[in-house]
Image (cartoon, rainbow, N blue to C red):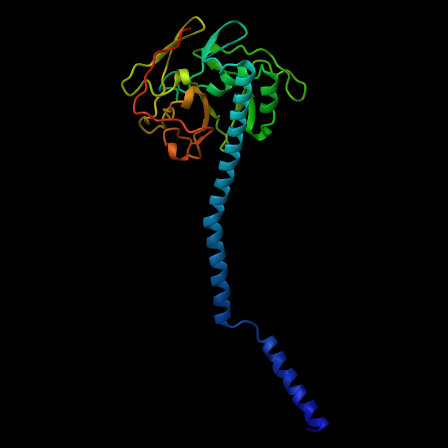
Length: 267
């Protein structure tokens, strides 16, 4: 082959290659690209929420494990489980019940906040509680049966007094985590069993704890019974309904009898 023929073939080859590079995508190629993008988007839409939900579940479970560890530390240091009543600074006593005062007021009682008000008095336990990430903690005043809980002032991490604001631990969905004391476990009220009464301040207050949902409302509680007479902590999960136990998150799994009414412990 002569030099001139090589040059010609080279020009033709470069011309064909340039033409191929310049022609762009065909309709078939574009369709394939769009299909791939659609598949990636659909995978993201289906997997993304599950990944987010799993992350929230794991974060809530971590908080529950810290609470369970704090309970162990408190029980070992005090050689006893937390009392079933919290006595505030002026002597008023509040039962640590995971329930409500009335079905007309669906907000559950701050059972965990009352329990932690006592547990915080132990230095080792308070140190563990402070290890809970700040996005899961807040402080607020508490009123039960028209009686304010007079919580002794304590010093917050920034050095300021928190006064009557009790420590409230939240789950990943922004709802207070609940505590179930073995003296106030199981179900009572609404479904036929008597509600329990306890003296709060100057008079008795009736408490209800039921795992059956009311009309168009979530259940009052999970209705669980503490295993081995040890308090347990739980989150109502993403739906906020403690009666749908499948998505509840627990520090330890309770038992769920159909009925479990007990009388109030001695006051």
